[in-house]
Length: 400
Image (tube, rainbow, N blue to C red):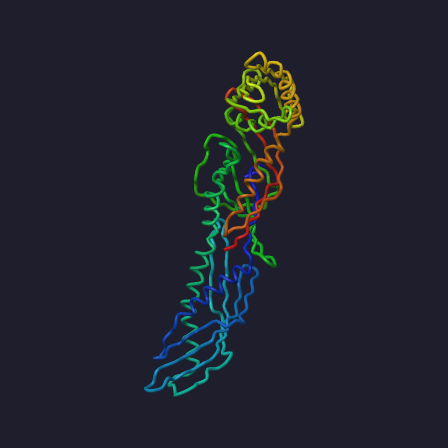
């Protein structure tokens, strides 16, 4: 992979989001009562727990309220206490974006030794703590590892994101951006004060076209050395029908004496010149033929060396107004050149990409990016453009 064919991203998971998830899993597990020597044992996590995350490891201090009860004739034997358990969760995000965890109870002690409220027991309080820790070690750690990998399914989330929102992005009319995302590369996992930050890059083959180029494929995940710069090749191929659709709003915006031109049957084609042909219904009825000879100049802009506009009215009386319309159209088209193709493509891409941020589970933002045009040709079938897209970066925050 070279520095010229990827788009960088940062996937961020807030530490308090991870904390909420871990505590939710632990609390749900502790809701399931235990039984020991005929005693029902109810556990609940107290609020003064601690959660510390650093260097691919989560350290937990879990104060657990313990209530033991056993019916005995007309009475109930009750035993209350508070147990402090230390736990750790080691985690690893692999190059394929799979999350692996290893949870364990590392130590425990009585914060408040059990107090017998009524009756008598024939076992030691240490045996209760040993039993609870053994069951917590078996059930809680297994549940943590299972649910963390399921709920933080990074590879599944990235694949779903690529197939649902980086599959096809509509730009205008029948023109779509097909990112054609093939590979997702992991470069770094960083713990900072607020986030677990996963840095990587998408490998794409983006194409702007009016021909369907969509293909839903599973992402291939790979490791990646730290990329130097985000840069991506971009191709643009459009038929003249789509070019007509894109140019039509421009023609309809032309003002003649305070009246907009009403355009019908607009067609674009290419011979040795670029030809535009359409009918006008207002302010006069007639046809308009336009010849242009556009080319890409050394500055990457679309310049024009030839402009000929011919307005033909349908009847003799309206021919008097044809030269006025002819001059207005010619002036408007002349003002278009030189046309900055890079700015035009950039503006067409930016809003649809920003509109990816319409999910509840992911918050997505993009940096400003640059377009540099290398080739822009008018062929018999349509236009063919090659460009590079630089400095595009996706910031993706995992919300839930």
